[in-house]
Length: 204
Image (cartoon, rainbow, N blue to C red; front, side, top):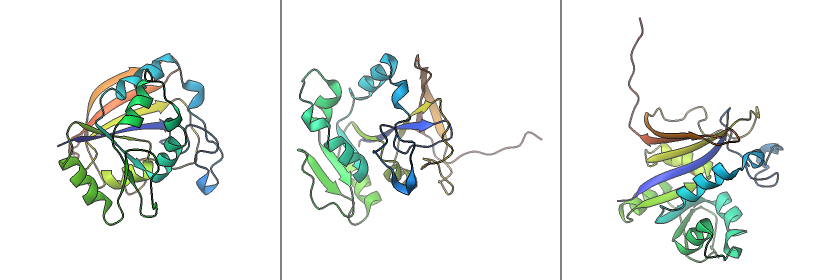
């Protein structure tokens, strides 16, 4: 059975929307896209290369899939560790409206019950299924305890608006902190493993 990991870029106030560019996701009138770009140093690149060494498949939300599919199929350098994995491994895009997926190796899932289909995908896959971005899909799957590992890259910027990964109504969950590092530009990278429901106590 595969583990499902999520690699997500976040601001200090928890916003995940449009980290890579102004046009990436302007929904809701969001006009602050591209906030992660000034922090993309060698340390950041090294971490992302490490992440892309381990997947056996990818799971993406529709918006992230369309962003990736518009760029990565054109990256054909076999020495590029990200392109090689994204272009060569199976990809699953969760969408109720996408009719077809042109990127080679892509299967559309989620038209009926995305949580059940992802649970079945995990049961039928070995190794690690990776999610990147795909915040709305991640929220849906976390509500069903289907995300096993979080790689949260927290950038030293506050936006005050935008879509937040842990929004009001998020299922109460506990995690084990398993790794941490900070890039030269100040991105705090933390890895957590899902540990069930929180425990509670009192300092009184």
